[in-house]
Length: 251
Image (cartoon, rainbow, N blue to C red; front, side):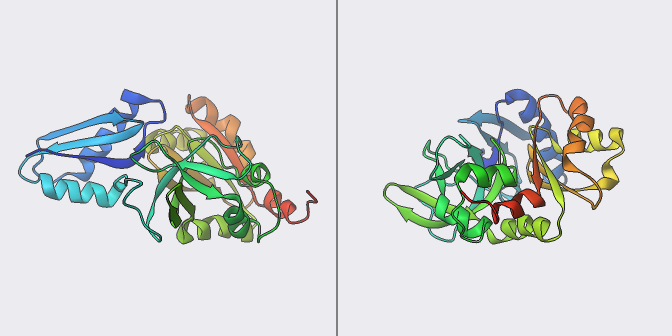
């Protein structure tokens, strides 16, 4: 009996192209398993996987472990962790929304929790925090549920994800977020521009990456170099000094 499930990867409007590239990656992950049938489709922007064959159960378990299964908003509870994708960044002042569930309703990262996690509780507006950290449309982050109520689910950035973000600020480094490029496309671009040794690449999702710059490398300077090799990708800088400036600003 074929198995169908939806993984925590979004196509971000790139449709068939993304499904094809992700399909090749999944085939590599399934090497050694007898799964003669693998199909990828798009459902509400998410990637739906269909596998069939003698090892279909093992294949499903492996892919869910690697990519995660998209949860229903009705089944999540406090403490659950999953991936979310930023939407409508800057459109509301009381927090940020993430696409995270099978249903159309989004998870809310409330402003009070943003302040607590990202600016030491200081009364900084949502948009200012988002700009300083380079948070942009389509960016994937690992989230943790902090509250489940009839009107919706509230989340925070997961401890591990937050630790990575905080470490960049503490080390006084810069980072470049790249949304819309596959891992192999990004790898080729870094090789062609000679910047592979200048950054550490952290994969946030199939189409979302963080390039942590080594000391002396400026995130903004990478954009004109990488941009021509990554058509359709969108960039955003995360610069430690902008975050530190929030602590001094008088809003």
